Length: 217
Image (cartoon, rainbow, N blue to C red; front, side, top):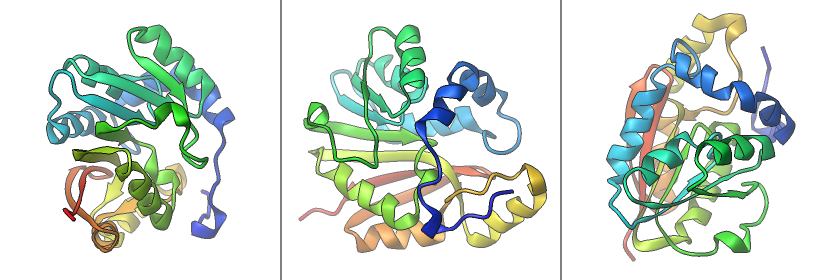
């Protein structure tokens, strides 16, 4: 088990995801236990919260092999999916050649190719790599790229309270992968303080969906 705290951030690189690209779809589709319990339900809730309509401009951050991006494209949206793993993007482009995929490292300045405005900015199973302060900073950056009625929807590994997180950690023992998971009881106040209205829905024991909108003003 890794022992990690916010001071250790960041603790991952693109190569690990490049190496995972060809088996990623198999892993997420197992949906049994930690960390992908309820994966499809998380995706469904992201779609429900985002309420896509034909013609909407969607930005999918950390698109991986393109599963979430494809769901929005299937609803008639104009979708751009980004990732910092070239191999993940290669698999996504092979699967979904009709979607625009771009390289983006969320820890680097926002690329000019993505400088437009979006109706929805979404992400799945990405933000648990970042400490809470960085999560909020990224949400703030994302909000500057929203249309006036835009919304951010994030599905990720998340727990209602630190007690729930610790219970899962103890249950999985050596199989637990220690990362910077969301905790609703901490995240919602932090987002509110930063100027966002947020709601949260727990989907499985280890994952949930945040629907985030800037406060008017």
